[in-house]
Amino acid sequence: MQTRSIDNLYSLEAEAAVIGSMIIDLPCINNVLLVLPDEGAFFKDEHRIIYSALIRLYISSKPIDGVTLRTELNRINQLEAAGGVKYLAKILDSIPSSANAVYYAKIVREKQRYRQLVSTVQQINTIPSEVGDLSEKIQKVQDLALNLEADRVGSDFVEISKEATNVAIAMRNQQKGLIKTGFRNIDKVIHGVGPGDFCILAGRPSMGKSALMLDIALNMSRAETGVLIFTLEMTETSLIERAICNLAKVNLAKVKARADETLFNNHDLIYKAALELRDTANIILSTIGSTPEQQISLIRRLKKTHNIGCVFIDYLQLMNTTRKTENRQQGITEISRKLKTAAVKEQLPIVALSQLNRDVDKRKNHRPRISDLRESGSLEQDADLVLFVYRDDYYRKAQKSNVEADGKTEIIIAKNRRGPTGTAELVFLDEFVKFGDLIKEDYEGHK
Image 1 (tube, rainbow, N blue to C red):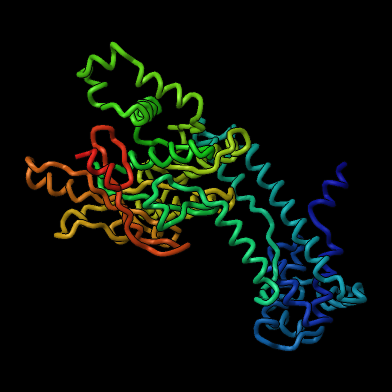
Image 2: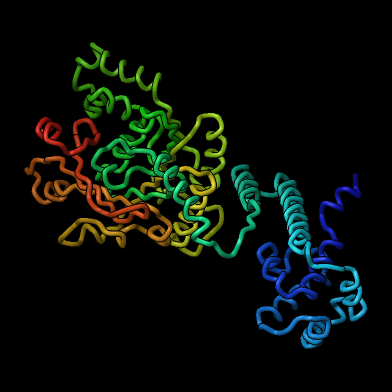
């Protein structure tokens, strides 16, 4: 058992075979580099030194053979550390052909990954005895586990003539896999959100970001898509109350204030809405998940048990990182990149709500733009889709309190990697804290 364990950690024969192949066959080096981009994959120190020297010669376009390698090692005073002339000769004698160079390289890479796995397990085993609270220890375990990347080995070029048909099929399947928001005017522009999409839904406070998120989540759930919502601002109960009143089309504020006694003397509307949620809503709520690692862990678990197809986070600025950063912008940048990576790896869309900075309120034209994203960092770079919620009546009412709100809302599509940008018109039904497509009957009914 002990021998088998050691064999899993390294293969000195495969390492020597890779190096020998590179010395006797220059063209194979490029293929080897695709599998082993640096010397870190090698277990034996001598092999690391030799491999690094070979790569320097290759990058410098210098000829490669036993003589030039020995000269390079002498130049950097590493010949003896690499085993000396005798060891170089031994490597060259051990490899009759370079035909299997890539195969040997893959063995070396696989052994490196196994060592990384063993090292990670050893680090995790020490965490329970460390000083600190339980949540910090769990975060460390999750961080270490997430750092174990899947292996990716591919070609360094693609021929369009051979790949065009495959890409077209993938594009068609991707279009079929898009999840509609349920708002006709939005879906006309973006056609829905798809696997791997990292989306930002942003707006100033009280614009209705959370209400729109809940509307979209309910729409997706009705279309049989499993939804996971990380609600970091509201409690689960508050969000469920909103969902019930949303479906029942009753005034949540009046219900909370018990201002409309008919709602309590006759529970039909509320109870029917609750039954609809019970029977049809495939929505999971979680208030535990303030770090990307916590969220990714739950996403992976619920994908298997609840068929989760879309994730919402309310909201980005309430999230934390597992390590200290110099400032909040760096923290948001780290969070953004991890969420984008998670969306791609888990092959589902992640929609993160975000605040806008106060600059938008200072301008005469209050319509938001991407530069208004608060603590933006890499948000605009990482996001595949950026939507802004803008209600002009919010600002008109702030200036003149007697102005009647008309609910007209613009969903500004400021970035859309899959297609055009533009504006979708909705109406905000303030009484029910929900949105609807801005069509004639909806708008007139609201007035």
